[in-house]
Amino acid sequence: MSEPIHPDTALGAVTLTVNDLERTRGFYERAIGLRTLDSTPQAVLLGDAAGSPLLELAGRPDAAARPPRTTGLFHLALLVPSRQDLARAVRRVIEAGWAFTGAADHLVSEALYPDDPEGNGIEIYRDRPRERWPRVAGTLQMATDPLDLEGVMSTLAVGAPVDGMPAGSRLGHVHLQVADLGEAEAFYGGVLGFDVTVRHYPGALFLSAGGYHHHIGLNVWAGRGAPAPPPGARGLSRFEVAVPDARELARIGERVAAAGLPSADEGGALVV
Image (cartoon, rainbow, N blue to C red; front, side, top):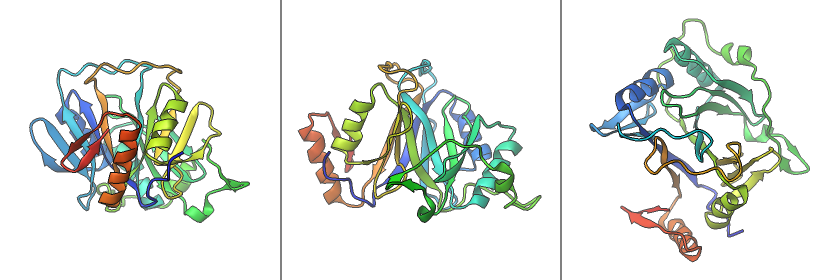
C-alpha cells in the first residue's frame, strides 16, 4: 500500500457515452433534477442548483451497446445534503413517470436506485452523520437492509415543491464492475492511495479518502474475469478524482509512472 491519497480528495464529475443525447439529457433534467450548465451538439454538462458540474453526457449515435456481464459502471452515486432532499428526489422520479430498480438502507446511508434511459445505474442517497456510522472492533459496517421509505417521505409535506437537485449535491462515489478485485485494489489502493474501508461484502470491495465510507466501490458480480466492453461503447467513459493541490497531483503522477501505467496530461489533469 502506498501513502494514502490526500484526505480532502473527492470525486468530480462522471462522463457517460450515450446514443440519444437529447433523450438522456431530458431524463437527467426532469427525473433527477440536474440542470444544464453547458451544451454543444455533441455533449452536455449537467450539475446542481449552484452550478457544480456532476455529469457530462457525450453523444455518440454510433456507439455500440455495452454487452451484459462486462466491466464498467455499476452505478454513479449522487449524494444529496439531507433526508428531505432524498424525499424530493423520490417525488421527482415518480412525477417524471420513471421507476426505481431498488432501495436500501446501508447503515451509513439511505439510498434509492433508478436506471437512466440507456441502462446506466444511478444511486441517489443521503448520508447519516459520520458519528453514527456503525463499527465493530473498529471496522466500518455496511449492509443492504430495507429502506424506511415511509420515514423518508414523512419529511416532505404533501404538495411541497421538489425543485431541482439542490446546491451542495455532489458525486459521492462511483461503483464499478471489474474483472479482478485484487488487480483493482492494487490500482485504486496501491497506486492512487485510496484506503480500503469494507471487505466483508461478498464479491465486493469499498475504498475511500479521509475516512469516508466509500468513494470507490468495486465488484465482480458480472463474473470474475469479465471482459471489457468494446472500445467506445455506451456507458462509462471516465470519472474525475479531484485532489486538493498540484503537489498531491504530482505525487500521484509519480506513482502512476512507477507502476508503468500509461497516462497523459490534459490541461493540467492527469488521465490514467
